[in-house]
Image (tube, rainbow, N blue to C red; front, side, top):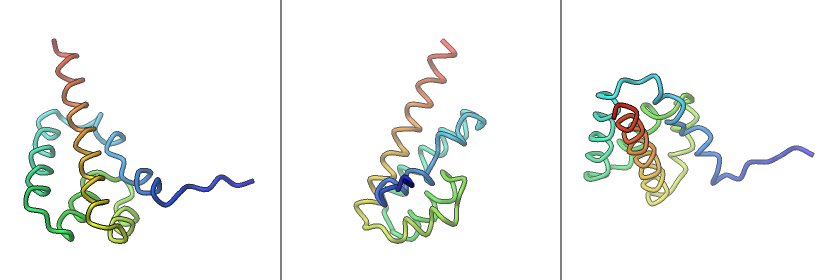
Length: 98
């Protein structure tokens, strides 16, 4: 029997910052974190969708399509989960340097 992915989980299969972060320089990760905070502070739906799908997904068009079908609170939750990944990545890099 074919395994089906729930629609709630589908977003997290295409919004995948953990796959692109390892090759990214630390200063770029910091910039992305600041940009994400600014986008969420002055939340505009279309801008948030474009920002998330273009910066944190390897499947940009699919991610954008899925995000457009979500409610605002779901987009904000996705952004906060991406933020957690960024913060953890920066903390891990700092720990490796120390």
